[in-house]
Image (cartoon, rainbow, N blue to C red; front, side, top):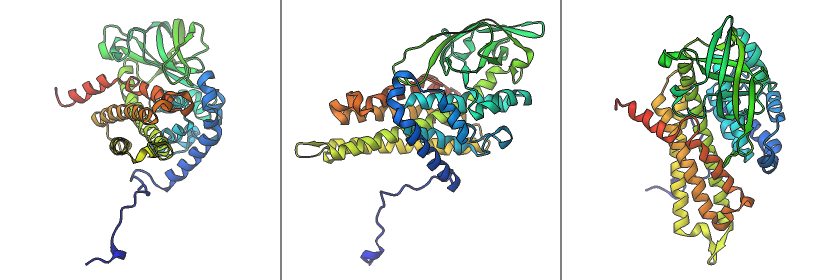
Length: 395
């Protein structure tokens, strides 16, 4: 018969570290978290109205946060892929989805193709200053008539002597108003199907690049989102990023990392919203007791916690495979789909638990919902993710 001293009791207060993280990641998490809480979070409300300033990139570059997994020879920290996950998670402490989005586009969407496919000269010209925060990057895929249908892109690049001349437009471009350069997807051979697209590195101060307007959005107010036009923009042949005609495949690879980082951010954002709402439920009184003591509310938290944890485990395990050389497109699509869905669901439930207060800007919960909602659209809609997953089974 077991004595009382030998009885093992559950320790709900401890959080076991996932196997993809080690002590170096813990220290990085503390460093990024401290910076975000001290220097970024206090400005969250102001930046909702003004968009976050460029000094955020400069400061993060100084601290080494913009090149965590890039080699030291380019100014990076030489870390592994989980370092990027740590950044995606910790930056949610800024309480600004727009800021997190603007930084993620720079660190995990626009610069990875430069590192993987760029020439040494391109890396020195674009990647090195981007890691320092001296140049801000953006990614140009979506067009007014081509979003999920990447193959429907109409922006054209036509060879003219030693140069290429680009004409077209891009929309919903994060960092579009402030970017120094854009990784642009253009059609170079209209008759080659998927082999007719090429990536270009385009300096945003080139003649013919027009930042037409800042777009108004439901959420992510702290980030600038632009409609861009390219009118007879002339770029040299060495502006091609990667192989001519392989731009579609290059960008499909880029989207996998973008989706995985998005999933990690969704999980962390949902957890933060959960934690803040749990605190509210222990303080708010109704009918003579804490609202968290009512079964209806308690069950809401149980459902949310279970979904957050399953999304976290799916994201972490898939990230481990990605880090170790696998190309798990099916699981990345699952992680992105599920994490973005549960993040919106959690934010909605947290508004409900807050009641009328949740609908007020004062508590910040409504902002979480507005910011999170984009994740079910950007980097591949729910519907596209479902189609990718379904097709992976031969359907």
